[in-house]
Length: 141
Image 1: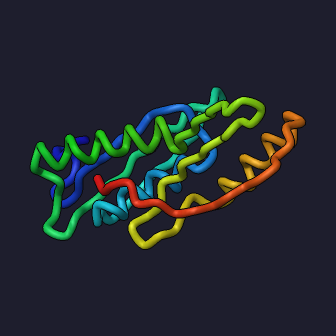
Image 2 (image 1 turned 45 degrees about the horizontal axis):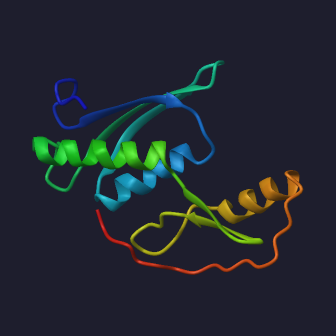
């Protein structure tokens, strides 16, 4: 984060390997913090590295408070490095495959997550006996 490049905005720079849903995860996280993007630049290099610059503001202007900056950076790291939480548990002959998909505060989840998971299992020739989709509130950050 940098507050020196603009008199009215905070610059958030993100450099990381590109993945499906990266921009969605960033936008969802910023929306949860009530942060507006005034200007953004997205670039993906040929080796698959995303370089993202976002000039943002919150309701009262720049993000100046170091605690808020640290909290936002940690949340972005969590959401970008672990967009889905996956657990595999064996119960004898049965195996449970649990996928936790973070949702926005207004209840919408990442688009096509369950399609992508079932497609991956199909490509691995793994049969699904039972699938359940539910919502659970674990906690707010």
